[in-house]
Length: 362
Image 1 (cartoon, rainbow, N blue to C red):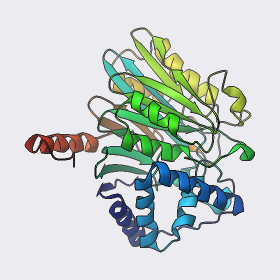
Image 2 (image 1 turned 60 degrees about the vertical axis):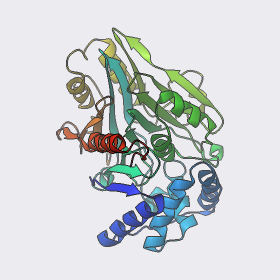
Image 3 (image 1 turned 120 degrees about the vertical axis):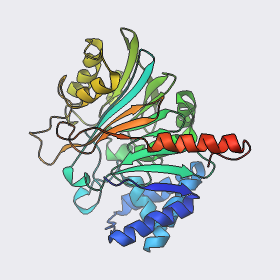
Image 4 (image 1 turned 30 degrees about the vertical axis):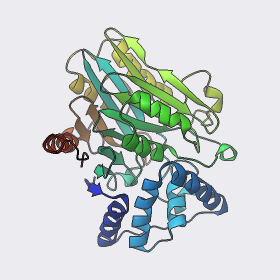
């Protein structure tokens, strides 16, 4: 897993990434059909309307590596949405992830297993962003610029899970990974994130998990035509919200087009919920969450019988302290390692603000 740091203006951050790609000899075989190109063109117009800064960052990359911007951004906007000609494109759709947040005894913790084809493991990234005039954040991704999960300097966690969508139902808009990036950079807490998300045009089915350090948390079940907020469930002295690769609420199940081809979403969901409601999570919350992600309380990462599919990383976030713990690979085999980069970013920003109250965070 790569650990890149980016700061400053969006275009210059894109240029820096483009130079990294050049140095590593990375190229992009962009094989899009007419449907994907048209989807990308229409979606880019909406991305430009709501999030022009990220368009500048993508342009910084495409200019540096010599790719056509519109084709390049179209490819990125098809990810996790309509990248059905998978053998010719990179990366594959995300279909097997489990994410949850819980609040207990005054602590708020987020956990995730990110499940993908194993060839994506080595190219995955955990990146620290400090953009000008915007939130600083950590984002973890099997792609780049957009991502599957993250935590920002205000203690807001944002995560996506893929839900299958029939091709004819896909619309121009944000894919789930760009939603994650947008909310990390723009929102300070769950309420603000929900408000911003309600206004976004959504390209295809997905779940967006939101949790902040105050303990406010929810999953927004999204389709191109409907969004529904699913509140947390209570247990003992706490509460939990979980999302997998299906819609959990009865109202949204008719929109789910996976037809059960979702890597045992129901089993994974029950493992998380039962792990908390049955009282297994009763000692140190970080350690217990790590054990849950390792599969010690039930099926969640045990894809031993699935060809070319595994947990490529696991994450635990402490939303108050901004500490992140990550296993870079199958959590049954890899240790969770502490990552304090976001915490240090926030500390330095606070020190700078204290010395010059009128200055921006960066």
